[in-house]
Length: 220
Image (cartoon, rainbow, N blue to C red; front, side):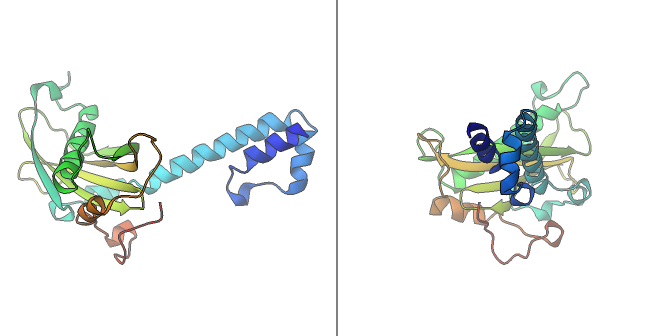
């Protein structure tokens, strides 16, 4: 039956532990109310899975607060601009994502041989996050600090600390995940050796991140 087939396709998107038995597909196909409800259930579980993935890549507030400069591997000085301030006279929260982009792409260009206009692989942001602890404002000088928390087959999760000049405590900690794709097809692709070697230099595993430090790679 068509309804049964559509339900089967939808339910395959669910984690195995949430998938109903074979008999349930046939039962649901006979009741109109079951099909839209089950489709909604599938959508709900997919959203939950996405949220869980983002949370798994995000530090807790307590972990982020105790970050120090020595927890990072690459640094970039940033001179705040007049336009960074908002009407509350501090750097607007949205500007921090420009900070993250600046240091990540600076590192990729100078240490991983990335050419934004011509490289066959490009990184696309699939998730991002930020935690704010104390405001900064123009004309302060900031120091951006970068590390890699997770390095997969085609993905990398960065973490960036934002420090006032001379401060050991971060004003903000955030980051994002890149999935590398082929420029033309936009299909995910394995990292090339040059990019991987460059990113491995930034990889840090600490006990509070739940890592063992044995291998800076994952399957993704």
